Length: 206
Length: 206
DNA sequence: AATTGTGAACCTCTTCACAGCT
DNA sequence: AGCTGTGAAGAGGTTCACAATT
Image 1 (cartoon, rainbow over the protein chains, first blue to last red):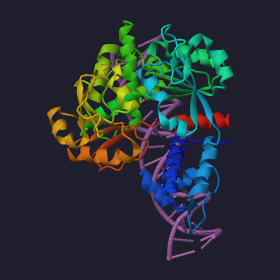
Image 2 (image 1 turned 30 degrees about the vertical axis):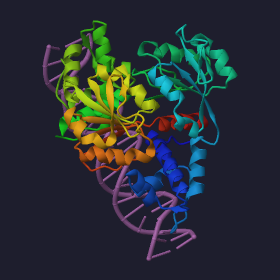
Image 3 (image 1 turned 90 degrees about the vertical axis):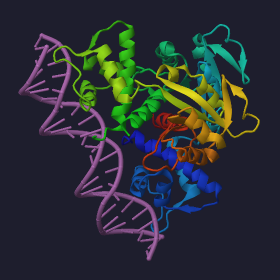
Image 4 (image 1 turned 120 degrees about the horizontal axis):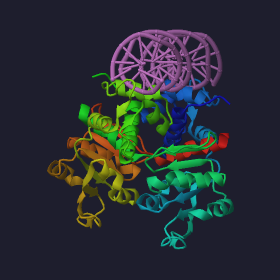
């Protein structure tokens, strides 16, 4: 299949959310123009993004909100639940366990890992904390698809390597460091300092 | 000044971090090739990014790590401390208060806001929790430059509007919703669901 | 000999603009 | 009449390739 850009995939996520809000408001039909306005982009962008995957609208009328949300959900793979593991239970890790937004989108944290002997075998939100060395066994048992990395920078690469060795291929990385992975593994970085530094740059310029 | 792309600014942040690590390892000189390798990009990209701001290297030799880190810090506005306010003390908000990475880069949380009467006037990590309606007074007193939005989606727009009215022009937004702001205000979105959904898409394709 | 700095080429993403459908 | 879907044009970002410098 033709390679779709990260930007397009990211925007599909925002359309998906927008459509959910419109459906809550009982809106049944929406134009690309309206979706664009709600997200601060152009209507041509919305139509082009969708055109990579099919034709979902009716000329002269627009899109059926429920049907389009359903299609985008299917495209993004949100019609299934994903089993997520969390590695590292510092401040960020603990916050993510309770983050309702994930569950709402079908991402369920099914296992927690840490390497601190004090924490291993304790319970957190009904989940037993496992030692990182038991990764393969637990990942298999819980059918883990995605791992959130919330460990210190110095451990991030080795922890990810351990998960890769057990067959995990998708990571959301909160450690502010660049990770090396094979071509068939995807790492998405969530680096809050980078965004803050962009704000710092902006304020310095203006 | 010529408009510099967000991607370039984002990469400068990563170079800044990379240089910090190299300096810790007592490395005194580094080539664009080495910086590129450590970040999984090309050396031409590194040189081009830097070229927008000046010439910092020596042909045949590379860059002095300390000097280059210093220059990038100056470009990004990291030579000063930034006073940050946090709006919303749910799971994410509380995690961010303790997030050491921010302080390390010169971003200091100086004020906390919430609208829950139960929380207002309580103390959190040595900071008094203020009601969001007192924004202007506190923002002025604490010389707030940047506000982190960690409130529920339904309040995000109105809270940001309140801060804008008090002269704040830079926001890091964790609420998964699109915010409308005037042209001279910058909002950087930190939306973890979008990244997870990109992983979902990737796993569905491959 | 090594590596920078940069114009030009290349590639990718966004916007335009309009034919075509409802 | 209104709005989609899309090829073509335009804008912007990345990589190439090489002269310049140490």
